Amino acid sequence: MARKYRLGVTRKAANVVVTALLARGIPINGGTGFLLTTRGRRSGVDRTTPVNVIEVGGERWLVSPYGRVGWVHNLRADPTARLWRGRRRETWEVEEPDAATAGRVLRAYVRKIPVTAPFFDAKLTDPAGVFAAEADRHPVFRLARSRS
Image 1 (tube, helix red, strand yellow):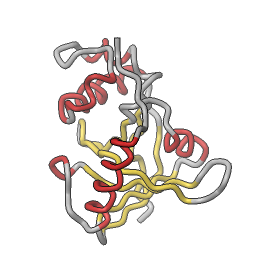
Image 2 (cartoon, one colour):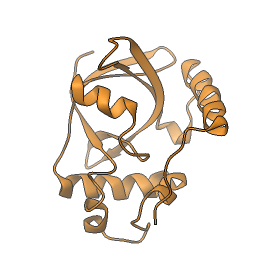
Image 3 (spheres, rainbow, N blue to C red):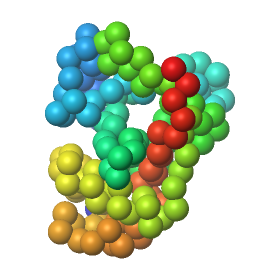
Image 4 (tube, one colour):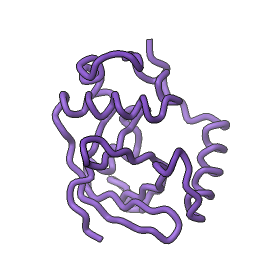
């Protein structure tokens, strides 16, 4: 059974440290770490959170390994992802793929960032089809069109 994500004191502290490093342009997780800024779906206020962007099949992807968190809801309301690290800034339109494609991306994501594996029922050795069954619980977004 997959672990449930909880934003406790330890995770909040880790996010503060990771955000500070990324804001200064220091790459983390092998260069996959970025800060994602989305517009709040209700407040209209910009919200920023650290994320990992991975490349699969020649395309770049955002994955929510912890489920339908705030930034997922915000991207669904306004599909504009502003990614940045240090002075590097990118703005993208995002699209959600079908479950089969999402399964392939989720499998690659868990292999690339294994610390997220406990939040999935699928195991690292499972085929993409097993990950596809979890696509509704772990939203995936393709960085579709650059606007920067």
